[in-house]
Image (cartoon, rainbow, N blue to C red; front, side, top):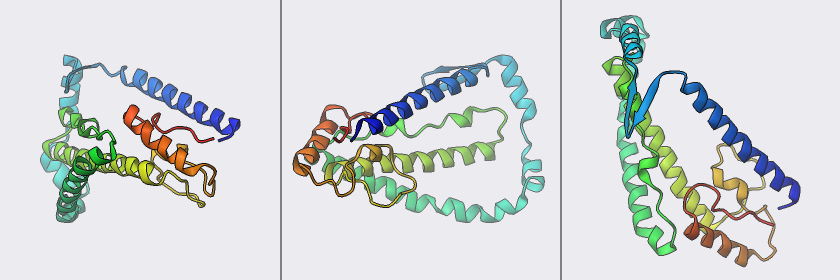
Length: 205
């Protein structure tokens, strides 16, 4: 990878860190503290949240009642989601030790703190839990597949790909065959040494 691409990747990483810091500073303007998995708001904020809560009756009959008709469809997706969860979890537990790839930490991808928001009624909180599970599962599965791709085929595509995982930018250029076996082995060793984040993918030369 040439020096200009290295610089751009470094700038992207720096901007990402700056964005995260700025967002955290903005979120801290809303008075809450995190204690383990519990989020606690100041008493005045909790009272305001309760006043803003939409009643169940109003929510059902006034706020897009047609959404109720799609309820069975959207919640039936729990079946393939649970199957995916089971399959990818068993896959990494069985295969990753063989490949010597560090397992993806499940708990880092499943967060259910939105159910603690007082301005949501019980149906809205239930929706949030379901969405958190579905999106967390897809992110969890994506990282498992991304590590597998890094192990077996860390090569970029010739065509632009939408929705690329974070590891993809560090993969080898399409058609770059120089010293491929040694570079592939470097990608594999990197996952053993630093399993967290995308920094464990060596930058190609």
